Image (cartoon, rainbow, N blue to C red; front, side):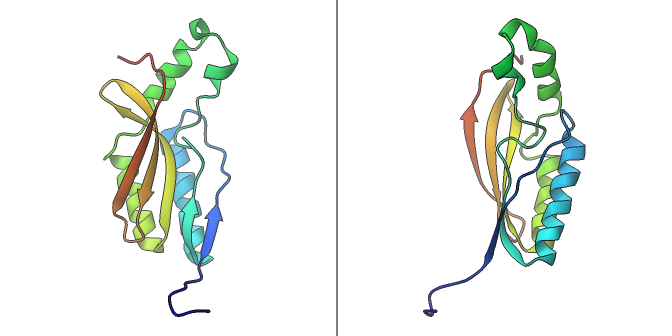
Length: 137
């Protein structure tokens, strides 16, 4: 190994959310971050919009049929900053793990598929949004 090279563990997390339940899914995410610390994982990458869940229903039903599901999704979406980001930040800091986390973010009456990046010290280091069609007002 050269002096400027580093070796560390990375985890690509495959996780099923608790559908339409932001808080329960956040708890699952935190438990996995804690496990990453135990297994010396320094970078953990979670699925797209795992909190509260991926809007799968929008691809399998016509728009007229998904109003209630979009309302549930909006009610359980993550505000950035907010309680979910504070919880994940604390878990990342405690475990010393960089965390990349996909969430449905609610902001200004819209939803975004957002990728959050937490540094190992818990700092929210980055946020990348992908616009998605919404019916929230």
